[in-house]
Image (cartoon, rainbow, N blue to C red; front, side):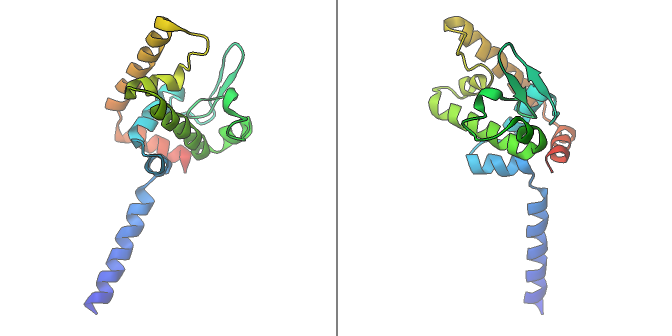
Amino acid sequence: MKRLLLLMLLSFVGTCVAAAEDCFDRVAREKGLDADLLRAIAFVESSGNPSAVGRNASSEDYGLMQINSGWLKRFKTSKSELLNDACFNVQVGAEILADNFTRSAHPWDAVGAYNAACTRLKGQDCIDARQKYAWKVYRAYIGMSNAKRQKLRDVTS
């Protein structure tokens, strides 16, 4: 009887833990990233708005992670999918960030490269743009609150 009760309790605890894990947690775990770092990028990029569209001179950015239209072909996706599936948007953003980490010597340069690919910016201008963005993300990261986590949990569920 005690074993049965223990098994039931353990299965309930496992269910609670799984339910508490949100899209950011799951994607971060799969990619070996920090979930709050992904959340911080989402807040810097879109203020946590899954419907955000940013317009640039020759491209657009979509959703929570502001995925640039230049990535559509590589990820075999569409503007509509990135705007309508917030968790998929986070997955694409995480893939881009994880790739940056494999190519960057310094972790915060990888974060800066998420926003400043430096296809047009060169030299010190590129370095400055990446550092400016990395600082924005760092400030969002250290200021991550439970309320912000909950907002992102709500929009990705």
